[in-house]
Image (cartoon, rainbow, N blue to C red; front, side, top):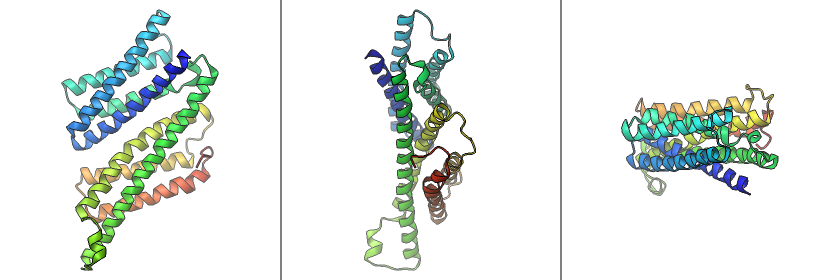
Length: 276
């Protein structure tokens, strides 16, 4: 029973860490202090949980957790979280904080969902199943964000066309103004991209555990990374190149077309994505 509750706490740590990474990503793009503060306190809670787990392990085993690779992984994750909190408080370098947390999330996910570190085979098997569930849930949520972003971009293009042709009327009045449509489309991509990144991290870990002979050139894997690249380029064009308006809406619409291709077509060609 104790192992079961400890496992649930480990899973809770991963979920809270994921939320913290999402908020740090938003702060990384927009220098949003409120998002940074919430992300910091979520990460601080993760640190408290990790410290509790490490202390409990050292007290129960009477040894420092560095003698095996999985003990070392967890200690490494704890060090990364500690450094991230320190950098965020002392140096306030958002770039370093965000990518340190991406690395920390990868490490803690590997440690948490590795089934052979648990004494109970049932718990280990259940964890792998829950890893897949979290991966799929985050992937679908990211696809949902991209879908809504596409809707706003489509409405933007319709609104733009009506204004250009000076087609005034009730249909025009029912659409939001161009700036609001563009902003909503952009924010949804900002939400979707980090969720897709975290989903890919967890999905690759599941594949390594359950499909050891997996082909890395699998269509679903390649398609997912192309999709991530397309939306990352959208953010680059919007933030670094200050591209706005019709061109960005068209790029977003084209990226969503690849969402559909990746979900419906590449999923059927994949050697192990049977759920799609």
